[in-house]
Length: 362
Ligand SMILES: *Cc1c(COP(=O)(O)O)cnc(C)c1O
Image (cartoon, rainbow, N blue to C red; front, side, top):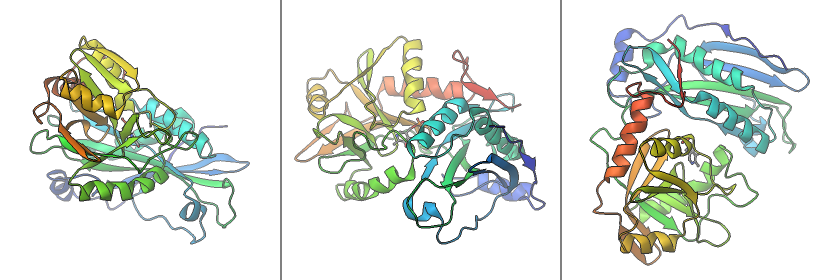
């Protein structure tokens, strides 16, 4: 299948420098979008075609479009950072591209070639480079590639037409007032994903399934839900959109991938960064009982969540049916903060990129 080249049809009315600067002064997360987007179509028998960079704007969809009814949809999330020399780089876009292919396979969608995914992100970032916040803090330009089934009709089957889109949104620091631990509700009855399900695919359906549990967590006074495995309700899996790490002194542990855990790129990167810093990093099963007991006996010193949006978020308190405990003294722990700075420094171009993760765009 041939790789489409992306035709450039840039906006004739981009925001002024002043309007853009006003947004970049306080971007928040996912509230503002850049001047452009990239779209590529796929049609059965023809493959990928009509790649375009166009002004950001609404999609026009027939009410019977497949995705609106049966949720054949996948997405990705990655960030572009400004570097000290003012160039811009994305973090491991090839890893997102490969995960996008894996998600596509699980949802019976066509696979976008890795180089086309990366090219689409590059073209958008290059045209909207002025939207990548200045170097220094943790601000970035968040890229959201996604694909939807666009065939019109209510028949249940893999669609014969798809649309791939990349949009971009400036993102402020996740913790503008300093890193703050989250509280976790470990749900004993809601599950996010099941063996044989689609928990390891990055698809909107998993998020739809998590919203009720998230509302229940809020009722319990907690920020986030921690999901346990769907069979034994015992093994810790992950949060709704972040993976988990457990710090045992010099050893850091993340739950083994089971097929119902999303394979986070931050999770994968931290296994390496931790080794670079002299920690032993391993994948092991962790039960909710072990989590509670090891916190009580003092061997489990810190717990943190990780994902592209927040990079690393410390876990402060954990609440589950009948019990509640605090991790350490409830403040961000030293290993958590050290790993967070180390990974962020690679992403911001402040530290050596030993693993060749940064994709520099100039
Ligand atoms: C995206 C996502 C993550 C984190 O993945 P990163 O690649 O690190 O951003 C973790 N869990 C779920 C369910 C996700 O959708």
